[in-house]
Length: 356
Image (cartoon, rainbow, N blue to C red):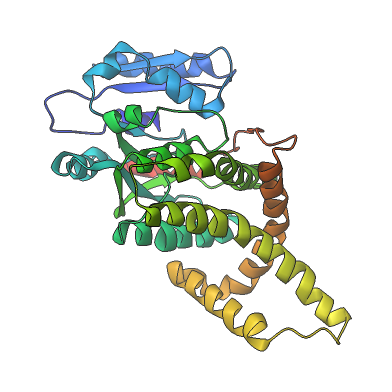
């Protein structure tokens, strides 16, 4: 990510400021050495090594935004360590914020460099492509709310500050900020044709920890923000209903629980107990429609639909468990395990990029 960030070009009056906030308790010497190398080449870059993990990612982002040089900036682009933005990233995203002062966030699409690494990464590619098409792009197109993905996006700093900045009360600090910005009347735009390359977790252990965080966090945030949303005076009742019912309750809670209970418990029970009857539309038509719609987001994986169905049913058990942990604020509600990325395909990408 660092090698890509320092070569991003922008024709604005100010030069880019690259700030690296390293929250891990290891690897600081490597980060400092890399930053020093680019600083000697004239890049305006600085690094901060945190000696703790308080607040996790939200804590790191909050620390990065507290420096004096941030006051000179109007926008902040955010990338996780494995993301590789193209040099023209800012040139293709900042104009949305400049020409429409009501927009606070420009979210871009993820492009996966290791999607072909194994069957599990192909399954993830299918699910995430559907997420960006069905949730992000549709939400942006109809001017409804969609969440910040935590990376590959540009925020207007004034909106970020007005919304209260980064909070570490849940493991989805990105969604938390987006909801609060929405409640202040700010708008978001999703740019589907701006892709940012990144890596998918290629081990089941890493993916399971990631899905725990992505399922537990929204459920816990729904529990903590429902009253705040209802009491808000700046957005319409329709927007409040959309946030509480559609975005949180249906998509982040009901979907996980329904998938597990219906497909992993009720349908198998009908095989063991023939007297149990489930309508054909529920067992065939609706699931087939949803599955085919998912396939449209990744046409090259159409032949893997059966594997995707089995994979998603298995993961629904883990997501349902995480959802209840978030709703009940049980023991692992604030568990944050950094998603392990192997970096193999990222290195291949950089080598190929250097050769060209």
